[in-house]
View 1 (cartoon, rainbow, N blue to C red):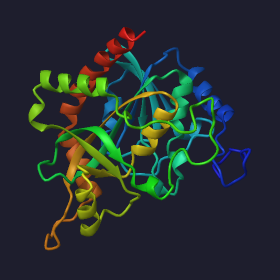
View 2 (cartoon, rainbow, N blue to C red):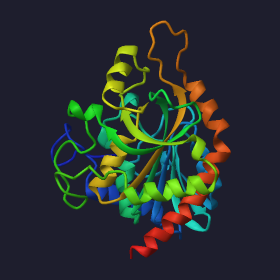
View 3 (cartoon, rainbow, N blue to C red):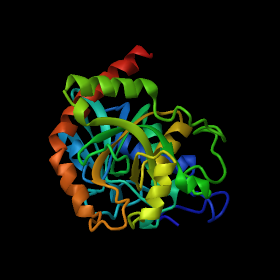
Length: 302
């Protein structure tokens, strides 16, 4: 059970994060900042530097926020950061939670519901991923157009258990999980910045980790049409869509998936962080231009 969180209505086999508990986490942050962001960003492995772009920023370490999980992964700072990016108020998760840390998926996605109760209506999710598509190169950025939820095939999902109608419906649709308008805006921004030569669009899948995939596993995913493989994002996007948030997500391709048995290469976490550092300035330009474009879309939709 999470520290400080009482048993839920349905006992210790279900998600104990009630609506009221999540509202308490959200209110803790709202009480300590005058900013009211509408855009949330989840920073993946090696991508926490996006939060460093914020001005007038306030840090909220996870351990200080009531009922919040704590990240244990190298390269994840473990704090929420509220501030302004290109004069737009945003909130960043600098460090996320993963199944391989021992967290159930409802806990991995809990911060998304905190965002919802803070007033966020658009979520940007980033991750580091292995490039399975043979056309992809290390350092490419892949806009996610769809996902293959491998853990969900076995019943592991952020929405498992009794449904809380105040967040969303029992059976949310996922065919437009990655908002088409946001993807179009992102492609336009990338083109304006001259990033077309390393900007891709494809299908992402999540594995449980922390071990990287075997050759046989990768060949199976390749046959299913997967372009990039990671260990996150899908639970957060599912929770976001359940509670009505618009979602945009992209993967930084930090390594090439190894699909040949005679290869002497091995994927490493250090390679992930090195590639993120190499692409840092491009990512900063991309996100800094993307945020005001999304904000304009939000205004136009009112």
